[in-house]
Image 1 (cartoon, rainbow, N blue to C red):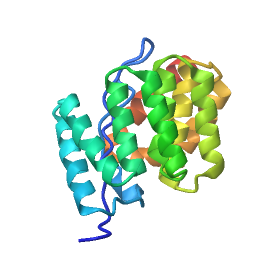
Image 2 (image 1 turned 90 degrees about the vertical axis):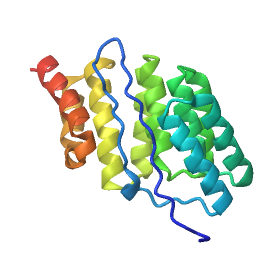
Image 3 (image 1 turned 180 degrees about the vertical axis):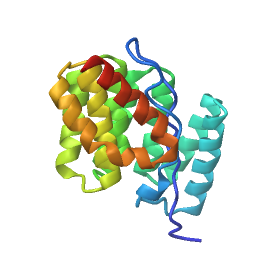
Amino acid sequence: MKNILLLSIVILVSCKSDKQDNFLENHDHSKHISQKIKSEKAIDFYNKGAKLFEKRNLDSAKIYLNKSLEIEKNPIVINELGTIALTEKKYQEAINYFNDGIKQDLNYWPNHINKSRAFILENHFNSAEKTLKNMLLKCESEYWRAYANLYLTYIYTNGIVDCEKAKESSNKAVFIKKDIKLKNQYENIINRMKKDCS
């Protein structure tokens, strides 16, 4: 089972900012990921850690994810550890993980998206915008480009208020609407933009 393509599930925890109802929802975007974990043992530890994270057993999840990382340094596992840090509201620790994941593999787009999330949750909208714009310079995936533009719509509606940029980004985020599990998130952000920018 060497070189099994790992269909990673990045847990995006429903979070709230002061300005918006749930702007993040759980979903599985694994069909848009090409990265993989090669070691069977690392996969096993990752899967155990991810399941524990789903159950909100964060300390145990971190133990298994770190064991996976000891076997094979991988942006998938690093992203998962960063997402746990976000859940714990340890934003700088999360950003450090996401930066490490980006250094490991520039094209593992969840690290860029989640890094922007950390900045958004800290109300550092300029840093979130910069993270996403840098990602968009390199990213060719229609899904991840739309995802980045959805977050930019959020930023331009809730942080750096710029209705023209919000409308432009929302038009580029339409592809996300096709993801059944992200449809509500998409509609919440777009409806907020329409209300605030009408």
